[in-house]
Image 1 (cartoon, rainbow, N blue to C red):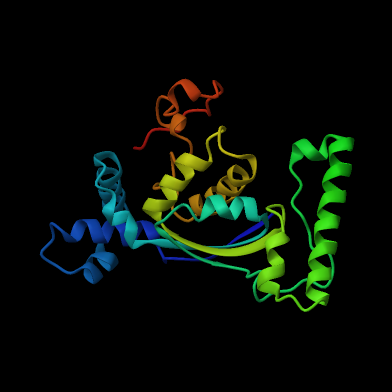
Image 2: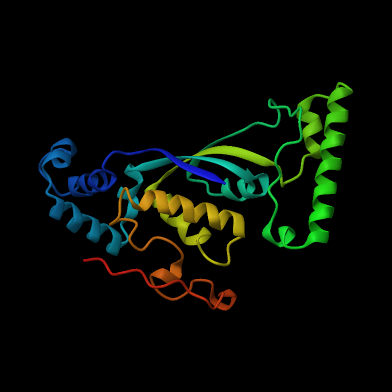
Length: 227
């Protein structure tokens, strides 16, 4: 898995604070962006994050390039509605050689399961190539390709959606591959806006587990409290 932060709103914390402060200021957002002190930015952010008035977080966004993940992962990822996606197309991209397949750790750890997995993916790819060689369009031959197929995707989310994504997908009950993705995305995002992402992640970082009876019983360490 390769996860890279391609772009984010410059000075995201200042941008969010200026948008929030505008509601109560006699001057415009551009002036606020330039003149607010760092202390004022932090005070506004604390009010936004503790009050739950999170619409201002939507004014800052992040774009990630994600390679080396499975279609099983991206099927889950695109369920997060408030985001933009562009994914490598199996309709227009054809594969002359066997592509990479993402192998779950449980399969990696079992020699017998790994043999079955490798034989199955090889057989599927051979059938895919046979259909292509027979003149079947790639958009139809791709119906054979499995969830394990490696893919690439570009994702853009605003901060509000990122926080929601991290809450659900950093949780230890999340599926292993998308949890790894979420943790890597969080590590890239938090250095750009450390105050906003201070307690980002699974709900247990901020309080009781939100999973109820489905809790994993192994909570993350509590996040430090905001100043």
